[in-house]
Length: 510
Image (cartoon, rainbow, N blue to C red; front, side, top):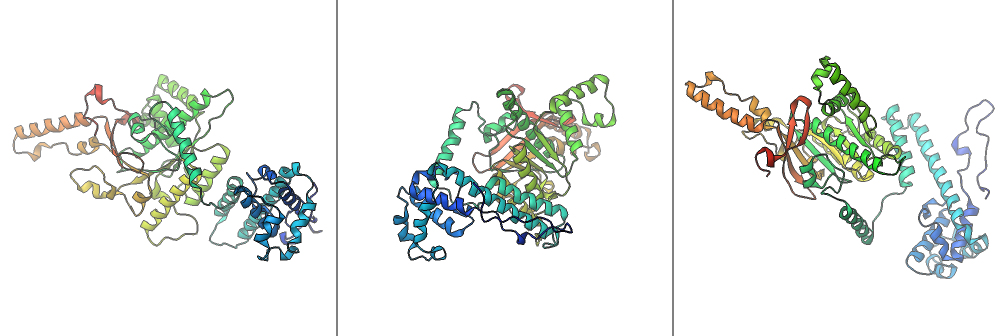
């Protein structure tokens, strides 16, 4: 079908300069719009061919769009939609006056070419709408580049353009709206059915830690999880462990699928503190059981280096992506997550750590607390928009060090304005061994050798109990129980793992 009302002009003048966009008419096909409406009014069953992708907003002519929406409302309500039944809605509204009044509905019937072609008409209309949206995005990009928004530098303008294109490609440019309760119930039943048919305790994406999966059921879409701790507690190591385990689980699913199937998702790590090379070295150290410190110093033998190379080859296929941009803004992070979701699929986002992030471009928070609040709200929005779990690492305030029991609490979160409020789960990493090492008794502090020996033996006993042990304190969980998960921690390889309390005789789980 030929496009009408789309006069074409030479895109360049004689001197080669581009014509202004306003000198050309936006893409539209009025013949297709009228033919589709005529087909719908003639036979309401034609609506089934376009209802899943077309709305009134896609029509170039606003009157045609209003007519389409009116037809759709009646059909979806189980009522007849034709010129007679639509008379009551349009007769006194004045909507049809620009096109000749009620007689326009009768003329639409004569514009109908064939009911069987309704789907083709709909796609022509939708394609013209997409191209009009692209023109609008292009105009915004050009205007911003000429200085319409001076607060945006070139990189931020790229991010804004990518965001608009992503929204067009995935959301079809439509704003969100209400979800009917029956639709929400159907979605909930679908999730429950998948959980019912899945073996084991993990419903979501695995963390690679057995006892944590039991408490949380894995990592769930749209959840924002805060993993916090004081320096040297192992936040990055634990987050890396979870990210690596999730990526490996995604790869295994792909391997179990028919040949040629790619991993259905990927894991994104935004490492604001460590470089991508440092993070990769940490993962390699853990998997190859070769000390990262010895790797950096070159103090490894041929056998260890060969194992290092072998593990590197094995891990190279993991769907794991690292972005080590320092002080990345929330808007840039959102854009890159959207791009990865579109190109590779996205299943998990890890941010290390949120206090090093910047809020979205163009915002100027009045205080640091408000800035962190905007960042956590933005991370939660990313989790909901892309339907992926987001794990954000966070520092704790120094007030932890002033207490006798140094296990963290929710009030210890730094700039905690809305971190606790926005998070679906808050977890704290704690290693008693770290603090015990600093409290080794000194003989000069005791007035007798016997008292010193007693204190030293008591300290050694506590050190033995805390050796290679870590606690993951699940202080808040919106959809499940709280409590403490005891983990194994091997400092040489900065490696977390499951702790077998039954056979190793450790303290019981809380």
